Length: 464
Image (cartoon, rainbow, N blue to C red; front, side):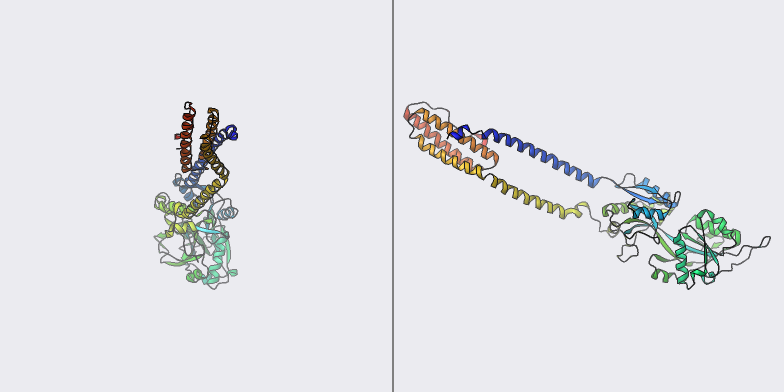
């Protein structure tokens, strides 16, 4: 029993319990930090970069207005000004922007998808009488009245983008006209007056929204310089839309550019191409859905400050669309958008099951690791029972005192095992019963030997 008297286990166990308490506290702080960080990550505002140009354009004005409107929303915008749609697309392809404003028929990256349709860019083709000779009178009628008559003539195209020329060649080809027989001259948007006075130009083309000031001014300039324009219908617009899904068949309403005189006099068949906000496919669905929700919620509010915002439309969510909608935008439009809990419920329950399994495994491992302490407890319990038998045979008070000291050691070991989790409450109850028997045995033996009672080891409230 000398091992029980000299064993420093209680001190080591107290240090171990203190270490466990500090470890549990540190783990709690860590878990709280992880939970707080996760909550901040989920709820923090997201800023999306958006490339738009050129400077001073309607597109840039719209994006600036959206940036101001979304300044306090969940998704915010950070505009990147570019020289035009081509540069914006290049930035998107290089991963230097999250969103870009571009025309649907440009050379878009393979992973580009539609977030919103800002407007429809409509093709307007018209001719005007040739400029009169110096000192002469203006001609009363245009020489070109249909697309078929464009062969052998020159068309002035407003805008420097190659996409307008490509679109004109598609229109000519589908109309049965060899595009190589039509000469094209491009003019900047600031050269409308120069284009109208160019004697080499026989017809004109503009691509933009029907309420575009550039288109209206160009028509007015040619009318002032040459005489009333003749609008050229694209009668194969439906066929173009079928063969080239990036384009749609449209109608230009009568008098839309001017009511007096009426320009055009009647509706005119034509084609259009969408002007879009695009995003890479891998951009967060949650962020795109939130952005789409914000945009379409405040669309009318934006239109009160900038009328062109009233043209914003939702993209086509059909899977076979020429430019498919981004999954985030489609989720918002189709009403399949999921909340954070709906999206991650399976993962949360999976994590709970994993943690539960780990807890069970940890409990088993703890039970396995404490097997030596349980075996030691059982050994001490048997030794305590042996002490009871030896008490009844003790001949001197000194022997009884030594046995009491041994019982003290058993008590310390039992309590340390309980604090360590190696034994349960029922095991302490057994020790209590044995110690009571030991106490009675010692009391009886002292009475027999004629000596007084001394303090005996007792199991007090510590076990609880």
